[in-house]
Image (tube, rainbow, N blue to C red):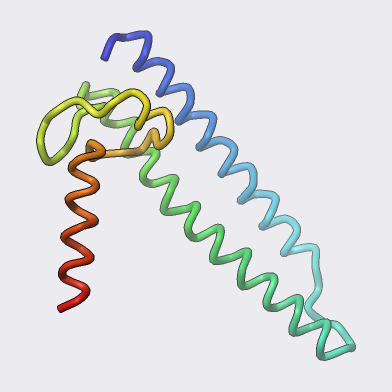
Length: 121
C-alpha cells in the first residue's frame, strides 16, 4: 500500500471516529436533558425502551471506536492492509467497504465457515 492510500484510509478512519464520538456526545446530552418522569406508564415504557436501544447502539459504536483506533495503530506501524492470518494484502475494495478489516476476504470466509461448523456441534 502506498503512502497516499494509507493517508486516505487514515483520514477515512479519523472522520468515522469523529462522527461516532459526536453522535455519542449528542446522545449523552439528550439523555441528560430528557426526563423519565412520564405520567403515562406506556409513554415511560416506550421511552425506556428507546433509551435502552440507544445505549446498546452506543456500546456497539464504542467497540467500533476501539477497532478504529487499532486500525490507526496498524497504519502507524505499517501493518495496515495485511491479513493477520495469512500476511497477504487485503484488497483495497475490502478496505474501502470495511476499513477496520484485519482479515482478507478469503480468510474471513474461512473464519466464518469454521464458526458455523463449531456452532452446529
